[in-house]
Length: 399
Image (cartoon, rainbow, N blue to C red):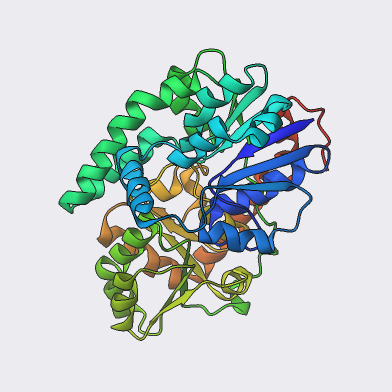
């Protein structure tokens, strides 16, 4: 089959955010049996990614590499006014680029990675109404922007969040009614989308995550706390700064030797400045492999108050045998509460849970064994391939 995949990123091995890592697995499975063309914005990060992209899929980058200043400002304004939609230059490329239109006319399936890119369905239908349209919902936009509106405090951020939320409420259901199939990562997201759909099928595809060997506590630094993520994402930056300011002093008071490692690309200046004031906190920036950090740490925290969808970092920590302390947002869609060391949105309770797990090796082992066994059973590659094939109506090949 011929598949056209609209995406905001070009994936590669080691891409520094969970959504891109999922897309990398997704694409690799499709390419085992089908021809895929990726269409993505011509950004500096995507140009760099193309150089690291090892695949036989064709990549088409959309937009000028060095747009004039006036064009840059126009695109920036359009992005501010249309935050729940794909970039304007992608629309224009579909309308004007005859090579892409020719590819679309012969496509059997057109998929839209990330919810924002479902805004392109109407344009694609004008070229090829017969192709199957599939939306991969990394986030449910209405929930994502509603939470941003509820937690952002700065006036400009709240205005942007309000605009994005209203846009998502008005547009997201209409777009989903135009597609044939919707891929989500959890039952929670499926339940959120059920009222908005008409003919589209909704398929839960548990994301494929590395099945790691869950070593015991003896091989780890017993007081090492870990957080991972793309640190330029507002929900990650806001969440970990909340943890540092509201929870970490209490942890250090009970466990003076405790350390906090924040591993992930593009840390903000605010985070770097905050971390520089405490020698027990380390911010790594981009790392090629997160595995060594999971292996040496003894506890994982997910202090998120924004965002939607399943937090892959939560499951990855469980697969590595790390007990997880999470907020409600960080834990949603993952599994029952008994898999966690604690779930709390209150700073005092969150810090207390961290202290309790760090100070009790028997509790640590109980949570580690329970959560890692569950995660290994639920997020294997075989199940991922089976569910993804079902979403595309391909014959299943379970590995």
